[in-house]
Length: 118
Image 1 (cartoon, rainbow, N blue to C red):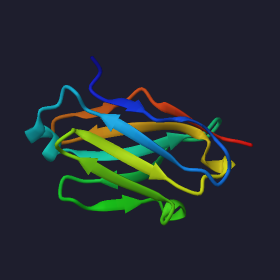
Image 2 (cartoon, rainbow, N blue to C red):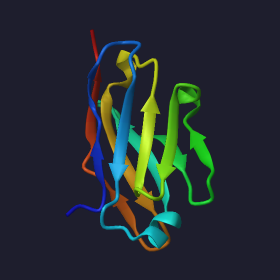
Image 3 (cartoon, rainbow, N blue to C red):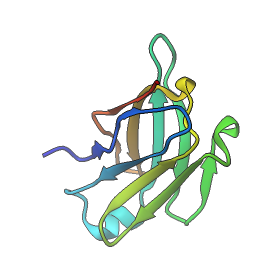
Protein backbone atom coordinates (compact mmCIF):
# COMPACT_ATOMS: atom_id res chain seq x y z
CA UNK A 1 0.00 0.00 0.00
CA UNK A 2 1.27 3.44 -0.92
CA UNK A 3 2.25 5.95 1.73
CA UNK A 4 0.09 8.65 0.18
CA UNK A 5 -3.03 8.21 -1.91
CA UNK A 6 -4.60 11.17 -3.71
CA UNK A 7 -8.14 11.33 -4.97
CA UNK A 8 -10.72 13.84 -6.08
CA UNK A 9 -9.35 14.94 -9.40
CA UNK A 10 -11.43 15.09 -12.53
CA UNK A 11 -12.89 17.29 -15.21
CA UNK A 12 -14.49 20.54 -14.12
CA UNK A 13 -15.80 23.55 -15.99
CA UNK A 14 -14.19 26.96 -15.62
CA UNK A 15 -15.44 28.64 -12.48
CA UNK A 16 -16.09 25.31 -10.80
CA UNK A 17 -14.68 23.77 -7.65
CA UNK A 18 -12.98 20.57 -6.63
CA UNK A 19 -11.75 19.05 -3.40
CA UNK A 20 -8.63 16.92 -3.56
CA UNK A 21 -7.90 14.46 -0.81
CA UNK A 22 -4.61 12.93 0.26
CA UNK A 23 -4.81 9.93 2.55
CA UNK A 24 -1.91 8.59 4.59
CA UNK A 25 -3.19 5.14 5.52
CA UNK A 26 0.13 3.71 6.69
CA UNK A 27 1.09 6.67 8.80
CA UNK A 28 0.49 6.39 12.51
CA UNK A 29 -1.22 9.36 14.10
CA UNK A 30 1.80 10.62 16.00
CA UNK A 31 3.83 10.69 12.81
CA UNK A 32 1.01 12.43 10.94
CA UNK A 33 0.95 15.12 13.62
CA UNK A 34 4.64 15.84 13.10
CA UNK A 35 4.65 15.83 9.32
CA UNK A 36 4.45 18.78 6.97
CA UNK A 37 2.07 18.24 4.05
CA UNK A 38 2.07 20.05 0.77
CA UNK A 39 0.28 20.01 -2.53
CA UNK A 40 2.25 20.48 -5.72
CA UNK A 41 1.11 20.54 -9.30
CA UNK A 42 2.69 19.95 -12.65
CA UNK A 43 1.13 21.17 -15.87
CA UNK A 44 2.14 19.68 -19.23
CA UNK A 45 5.54 20.94 -20.29
CA UNK A 46 6.09 22.84 -17.04
CA UNK A 47 8.06 22.38 -13.86
CA UNK A 48 6.39 21.02 -10.76
CA UNK A 49 5.33 23.92 -8.56
CA UNK A 50 4.34 24.27 -4.94
CA UNK A 51 0.66 25.02 -4.45
CA UNK A 52 0.15 25.03 -0.68
CA UNK A 53 1.64 23.77 2.57
CA UNK A 54 0.11 22.89 5.92
CA UNK A 55 2.88 22.28 8.40
CA UNK A 56 2.89 20.36 11.64
CA UNK A 57 2.59 23.59 13.60
CA UNK A 58 -0.78 24.41 12.09
CA UNK A 59 0.55 27.03 9.70
CA UNK A 60 -0.52 27.26 6.08
CA UNK A 61 1.12 28.90 3.12
CA UNK A 62 0.15 29.31 -0.50
CA UNK A 63 1.62 30.21 -3.83
CA UNK A 64 0.96 33.92 -4.22
CA UNK A 65 -1.01 33.44 -7.41
CA UNK A 66 -3.41 31.00 -5.73
CA UNK A 67 -4.18 32.81 -2.49
CA UNK A 68 -7.87 33.29 -2.02
CA UNK A 69 -8.91 30.49 -4.37
CA UNK A 70 -7.23 27.44 -2.82
CA UNK A 71 -7.40 26.24 0.77
CA UNK A 72 -5.33 23.48 2.34
CA UNK A 73 -6.48 21.72 5.48
CA UNK A 74 -5.58 18.63 7.44
CA UNK A 75 -7.69 16.17 9.41
CA UNK A 76 -5.47 14.38 11.89
CA UNK A 77 -8.20 12.00 13.00
CA UNK A 78 -8.74 10.75 9.47
CA UNK A 79 -5.08 11.22 8.53
CA UNK A 80 -6.05 13.18 5.48
CA UNK A 81 -5.03 16.42 3.88
CA UNK A 82 -7.36 18.33 1.61
CA UNK A 83 -7.02 20.94 -1.07
CA UNK A 84 -10.18 22.90 -1.78
CA UNK A 85 -9.99 24.66 -5.11
CA UNK A 86 -12.48 27.30 -6.17
CA UNK A 87 -13.04 29.44 -9.24
CA UNK A 88 -10.94 27.09 -11.31
CA UNK A 89 -9.65 28.16 -14.68
CA UNK A 90 -7.92 26.29 -17.52
CA UNK A 91 -4.50 27.37 -16.20
CA UNK A 92 -5.15 25.20 -13.14
CA UNK A 93 -5.11 22.09 -15.31
CA UNK A 94 -2.33 19.87 -14.02
CA UNK A 95 -1.49 16.71 -12.17
CA UNK A 96 -1.70 17.48 -8.47
CA UNK A 97 0.65 15.69 -6.09
CA UNK A 98 0.56 15.30 -2.35
CA UNK A 99 3.85 15.49 -0.46
CA UNK A 100 4.61 14.48 3.12
CA UNK A 101 7.90 15.57 4.62
CA UNK A 102 9.57 15.21 7.98
CA UNK A 103 13.14 14.87 9.24
CA UNK A 104 13.01 11.18 8.39
CA UNK A 105 11.17 10.92 5.11
CA UNK A 106 9.88 12.65 2.01
CA UNK A 107 6.92 10.87 0.42
CA UNK A 108 5.06 11.61 -2.78
CA UNK A 109 1.70 10.42 -3.93
CA UNK A 110 1.01 9.15 -7.42
CA UNK A 111 -0.83 12.30 -8.46
CA UNK A 112 -4.38 13.06 -9.48
CA UNK A 113 -5.34 14.76 -12.73
CA UNK A 114 -7.34 17.97 -12.65
CA UNK A 115 -8.64 19.23 -15.98
CA UNK A 116 -10.48 22.53 -16.24
CA UNK A 117 -12.29 22.81 -19.53
CA UNK A 118 -15.64 23.68 -20.99
